[in-house]
Amino acid sequence: MLRIALGQMEVIPGRPDLNSKTMLTMIEEARARQSQVIIFPEMAIPGYLLGDTWEQQAFLRDCEEYGRQIIAASHGLCIIFGNIAMDWKKTGDDGRVRKYNAFFVAQDGELKGADKFPYPFRIKTLHPNYREFDDTRHFFSLRKLALELDTKVDDLLQPVNIKINGQDLCLGCILCEDGWYDDYGIKPVPILQQNGPLDLIVNISNSPFTLGKNNKRNRVFSKQAKETGVPLVYVNTVGLQNNGKTVYTFDGFSTAYNNKGQIIAYCPPFETTLKVIDLDLSSGAGNLPTIQVPDDHGISSIYGALSYGVKHFLKLIGMNKVVIGVSGGIDSAVTAALYSHILGPENILLANLPSIYNSQTTKGLAEDLAKNLGCLYTVIPIQEAVDLTIRQLSQATVIQQHGGKQTRLTVSSFAAENIQARDRSARVLAGLAATFGGGFTCNANKCELTVGYSTLYGDQAGFLAALADLWKHQVYAVGDYLNNNIYHSKVIPQKVFKLVPSAELSPDQAVDLGKGDPLIYPYHDYLFRSFMEWWNRATPEDLLVWYSGGELESRLGCEAGLVNRIFTGPEEFIADLERWWKLYSGIGVAKRIQAPPVLAVSRRAYGFDHREAQNQPHFTANYLKLKAQLLASKCH
Image 1 (cartoon, rainbow, N blue to C red):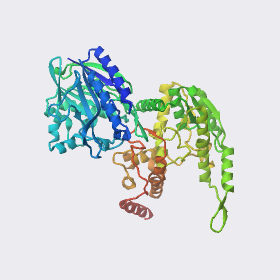
Image 2: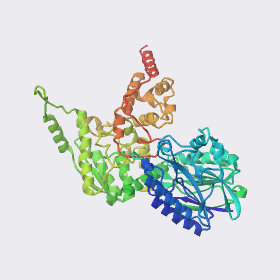
Image 3: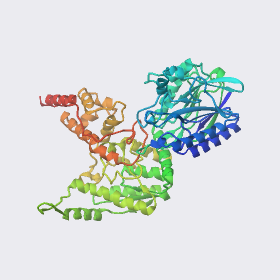
């Protein structure tokens, strides 16, 4: 029987001192519970998403020193952990000191695994180069090492052999992406088994939360355990890490599988915990009963990630008071309920900032929300300031330097709308936040962010965009969840859910008359998701093919029959498609670049997860051909 402790810990990026302290505390607890092996996550000492901190040699030496402290603590206990490893005599492809994402096995004060390998540790074979990952920028992979040594990767993928109570134990050492090899030519787990045979597969990871990802993890790792006939233990980190523009939560969900691929133990998500399990490796860990793991694809998982992420982000930046502009709409209501539950209503100042276009309906809903939550509340009308700004701009004399001609500016209705949005954020909310001693939020959702339906330095401003990776229908669902499962009360008034979404910046957006945003969320949520969130992202060409073939709704996943109810024919459909595509790939990019950090929950969030360049919108030649054919057929 092997007693293993799963050290699911919060890894604080860039703080090897704090992380090693956490590890040493968990090591002592594992020792007190008679554990024989303790397993920590990938990059447990330095953290993972560190930007170019990896270029600081002093930081690298610091990580080495804290790693030595962990190794020294391994007397009478096998400690498995991830850390950065350097070969100070060699360089990487960037000409800097060579760095490896490394897997360490320490026992009785020394490292194991120096046999059949150039180093007394194992290194990552497969480096992810998609989404937020930047491994190839900083780390040297096993594949590159094999080329340098003029040998096969298979020959370098060697298990690590240890002894526990005099018994030999052959470990297959896997670092995160090395377990996600379906799309790679190299398959580390089967190769390790061939070079074994293995007694146990250990996967240490630093894997961020994505909605539904743990379900896929379980399918992938269950299959590996079943196909090799070897028990597998997966240990992941919890916590919050970021790459500047995108903030990621790490859910943990560390899990053990028997040799049939069945789940026999797991750690709760988003919790630091030490899970101790006894594995009978002679029976393939068949001594433990199989269990079910909670599904992570629902609204409860989204809420869990949002709540955890916001709470830890506030802690990270040292903020404990927040100002939220509340309009009476769903986005600001969900933001208010979310932050109020995290910080307490006494630390939340809700501000309603009406102009002449805001209805009594929305003003009343904003006040009802504040009363229901028990938050601090203020009303600061903006019309006087808006009128002053418009008057100043209209009366400003513009002088041509050659010829001396004088002209006046004309403030368009569109510019007047933007002036309102900027006045609310840049003047009032920013001033309130400074006075209140906190920050103010960005309440934008993903649909708005996709096409830039927001105002720079206005409603797109704030210290964090907590809802900006949620489509509008998901925002409504989170609102329902907050009412029914968190507060157990209708703190968000029911009328908010039924109100037409509207910015209320002009008479054309009068909610009491049913007028609102130009976005038709039941359709545009799904259209925009195809633009940016799909693995193979859709373009107008794809969408026009599906539209002409009558399969657009089934492809997008929206309600059947919706497109024909919205658009009278191809001309309207194409005009709408081109309008939003131009905004998405045009001014929307410029706005997103200047947006606040986005809290990620989906498989692709805006920010560094969705890398963009400011280029002109483009329509493919085939799209233009299809468009001409479709419009010509309408004429006939």
